[in-house]
Image 1 (cartoon, rainbow, N blue to C red):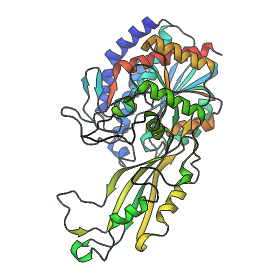
Image 2 (image 1 turned 30 degrees about the vertical axis):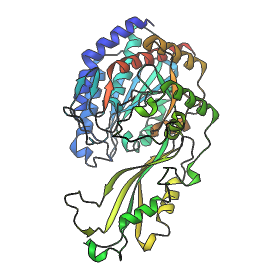
Image 3 (image 1 turned 180 degrees about the vertical axis):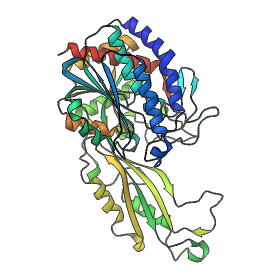
Image 4 (image 1 turned 120 degrees about the vertical axis):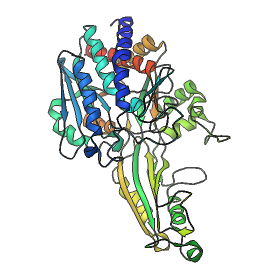
Length: 469
């Protein structure tokens, strides 16, 4: 493969076609079903699917077929097959659904307003994960232009990842025979430690997300009349949360949510900490004198990738500051997002968490925990020599620097599913979510040059996979 030719061709394709199409995609508020229960009626998801599918068809790639699968009651799925050597299969994955808009966007930016600035494309979903289908097909197009032999390629683009990929297992079952048994799985929905080299994700945490509700009364009452007699639903929530998390340290208390960190992952974290230095924590938009939990970069990386952690991501039952009158409220709800270690068996964890939170309710309050989504994490199998060599060579060719590996703190539910289903497969899990790209938050951006180089690396890996057989 001619790296100079690929770099020039990819640059032209992205500038003239991919970036303008991504700008159109950002304008579509196709929130994942968990955040838009009326997604089907609103029609935004199909609009995004049609945009991506039409772009793929316009590339006129020989041997490519595309179908949009729409099972009743489920989000759509784009299924793409590209003819190649049928002795092996490469499976490529991405998603089109988006997180909510979130508040706090800088002036001139917005979730559904694409803005090009300093080589970055701002807007919700461009980096997580709208670019993936365009990168996957662009990589294949480079193979065709270079007349490089490749294996049969299957591309799956789902629309439910941000809701826990709950619709995907049904599609995998439906398409199992057509997917085959992948030798290599390429996922483009992960992150990068910096924008200087290719990053390979070696582990992902699992997650349990659910709503914890405390009810104490049938209706709100005067706080002066009831306080000191009726326990606040918020205070009872605090008591329950102390069963999970040490408020002073953030350490998760139940030992059944911990695992021993494998030595090879510990060694990888040490190398990542060396490469990234203070960027491990300095990348976040700290306010005032706010400090990280530690200044030990290795400890912070391990906290982020292999240790359980709890975040509180939503609430119900509390009025805003203007409407907050002197009322002892009847109930309070919090949305809990519990990250769990990559290798922790998630079987029965939702029930164990429910029991922990709802048993022995303080003051006899009504406690409920409604799990919304969740799943096990994933840890990569040992990388085959051919894949390690390909990643090394391609990173140096397009970034001018050796690649790096790291764990990710987030979840990609599909990876655990695939790891179980295809235990012999090799994995290239990578992505464009680097420092300050801020997926799920305000000011999300896609670093366009980094995405171009990543796409070129993927094209090289696809060619090397075929040559390594």
